[in-house]
Length: 100
Image (cartoon, rainbow, N blue to C red; front, side):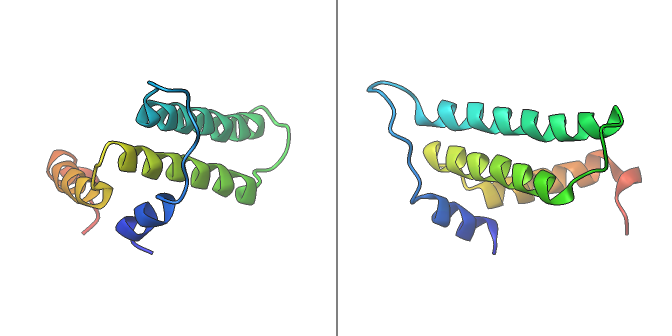
């Protein structure tokens, strides 16, 4: 699935918010919370609580992606285009890290 298709799929999800609240901000805060949950999984591995549960981490990453797609929709951002533009910028900026 490409990014545009994923954005279209996320259009079906809307969270009811009180009048006057910014939906995009809500989704950005949701993404930040999910990044925190992913970080907590990795933190527990680093402190020796057990092995990395890749499935659990993958689901948290998916939550982050869903919130970012929803935020992009709320702000009417073509995330696929923005991704392509940013990758071009990064390819120039970080030449030594780009595998050829």
